[in-house]
Amino acid sequence: MKVLIVEDDLVLMDVLSFTLRREGYEVIHAQDGRAALEQFDAENPTIVLLDLNLPQLDGLSVCRHIRQTHDTPIIILSVRDSDEEVIEGLRIGADDYVTKPFSPAQLTARMETVLRRVGQSAPRKLSLGTVTLNPERHLLEQVDADPVQFSPLEYSLIELLMINGERVLPTQTIIDRIWPGGGDKAMLKQLVYRLRQKIEACDVYIDSVPGVGYALVQRKR
Image 1 (cartoon, one colour):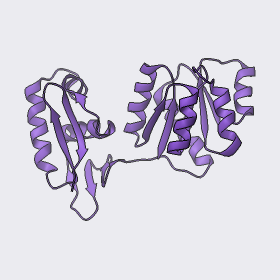
Image 2: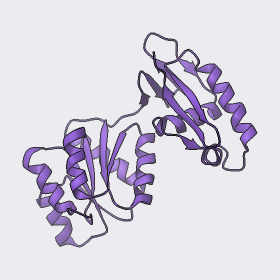
Image 3: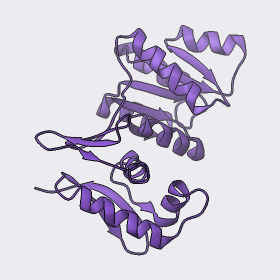
Image 4: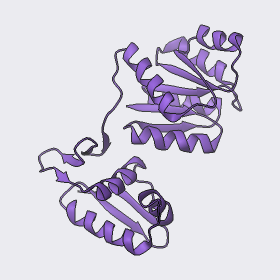
């Protein structure tokens, strides 16, 4: 399930992207209104999260353009919280209006509500290519292959890598996320070694970029 985030605040964009990837969404971005319409046409997202204060073309104009031809769910994200502005956003076709600041948990709950309203279900598993991560059972599942079981620590790492969808994560970022109380490169190296052994028969592998970090990528067959 694909979500288009239209937001020019890069810090908020990163927070939302991480949160939604963890929930199983495929995330695409746009930082201005014109790029948003281009991405919408190219990617055909399932749902749109739309800021109002955008360069090039404001969020209300983006919403109007989309509504001329599509009924894709749109949730407006804005610091504007007056009754008039909320009503205007809903009147031109937004399905919900969330005022900033908000918690990521609140936003994902609102997204689930909107998606249910249009007959869609929010994703529950992370996927990369042919493999799927089952968060309830800590398994990596693949068609025509035995599932791979992980320990809690192993699962934390592969989940973090899969959330970021083949992007290289810096070593220190991974350490801080996996061991918030304190870890080091030797601990991470050993954990990566164990994971590589477990997934060596899978269609994904952990790639290392010396001096930078690690990424979970699809094998080329």
